[in-house]
Image (cartoon, rainbow, N blue to C red; front, side):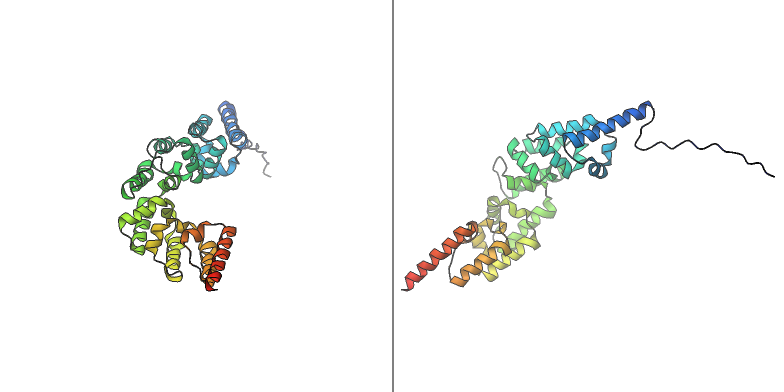
Length: 281
């Protein structure tokens, strides 16, 4: 009969949440401090940030504080910085010193303008200066001849876009679709830089077609007079207001038709209708 030998039990595996040893204990304390910094000081949920940016686990807490201090030194509040870090968690472990210096000195954007731009588009701080920010600024300065300083907010937001993939194709599309010469297109863009951020298929094409085909207006003339046309919703404002004018046989400039609020627009319709009625009596 074979004797049974009692084997010793294996030692328990260390818990991933419990640090062991002097070095492990220090790492555990450091990690808890980072969690406290993210949750209590920035008021962010740390776990999605850790999932999006695994480097946070090993990054020293002073590095995270340096990233926060860098943003606040350029006019952003801690709450603003939290919004930026939430959108781009990698900025916590890669302080965006180079993009901030470029936006401050080269664009140039004073602190209030820089804060507004970064809050609208945190991607500005995650973009490469040599690959994206500087080429976009040169495009706006040299090709569009947008020389205003500081750079308008709508133009500053364009610095996060690729020249080859976004900015240049939209300028060329607008030139070809309207028949405007290059200098005239650039004049339109200087007055309404946000046009370069609108989608060709989702915004520019359907609105140009509606302007020419349904409204019977010359896009080259109308955009030269009112380049902000593309900023208005086709279904929410352009189409219903055009239909209201057409039903009453009233003519109105694009600017008057689109920029007035609903009450003002109704009042203009009433006045125009009364005026036409008196003219026929």
